[in-house]
Image (cartoon, rainbow, N blue to C red; front, top):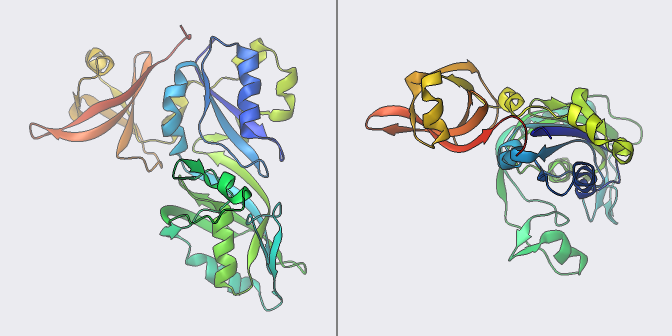
Length: 308
């Protein structure tokens, strides 16, 4: 079995963990399987599943920028910040127009504090927020910094006070919270009617397998759809290493930056992490000065090829 990434196009209503379990059943219990970040069951779109040694790249996939298409209804607030929850408030949103929405969304660009929804996987004193909320307990989640690099209106607001938004954001951002806050800024409330994740870094629907087809997918077909670990280079600033330095990286030793050749820039915001392509391995490394010289220090190195 090859090691690498599977891009799953998850259907609305299906749990991300069910997709991971389906892949585990196909590849067998001896092959490690993980994920690069889950997607709400009420949402659809791209889910990256990690196979074999690629499971070690989980946090690096999670750190990749993500793009979404959200259908928003103004004038409605729900308990979950999407249409699956109970109605909390309804307001007249007839005063809104396209120009007002465009002005409001500009303030969401860049780094800002955001409070995640109470129905979320955020941990509070060791328990998931959604578990506390569903028991009727009061949930107080502290705000956290998130980065939103693009947000724009796709269509004109409809008579039903609905509009579609395109959003590009980074790890930790909740689109439901963004929409909730947008509704508050516009004075009428808002909730998510539908949410679709269209990409995670370099991974998109072009190479995806529909979650609806996983039950009928055999191991040979699945293996042919595995994307090599090196393909994550589309999301990170990537270097190629001088072959004489391969052993140093594999042994976890620092490599001077002048022994690396940059081949691409990346968009991930992840603790000063770069990606180094070596001979039959990829290495996620941090940059630091050692004895006055900038060097790449391996953090996670993954051998490519067949899973042992």
